[in-house]
Image (cartoon, rainbow, N blue to C red; front, side):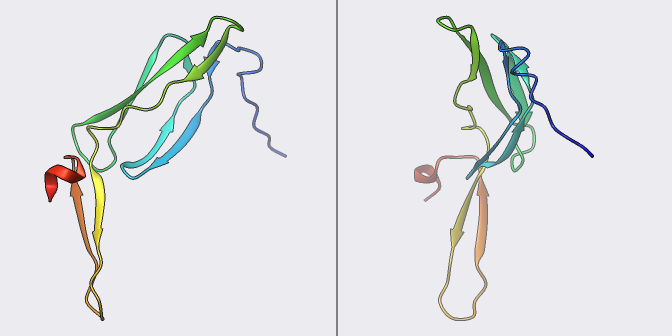
Length: 100
């Protein structure tokens, strides 16, 4: 028998592990102490990193994740053709408006 327990209930000043799926990739954020910043490599853009801060809510001393900063990570842009032609996939680290 196995079980998973979030240490967040024991340590409310710890942001929990969280998996976030975005157009720029899937990010598996580790449990992180408040006022700390976690960083992960961009899955589609070698040499770039995504970051996310763990904030402490003063009113209840509870740690919460800030929105991830993933703008340096590449995005997927799909261009579908009609008929039996293959779909083209393009990786880009620039915003969509800059790549057109």
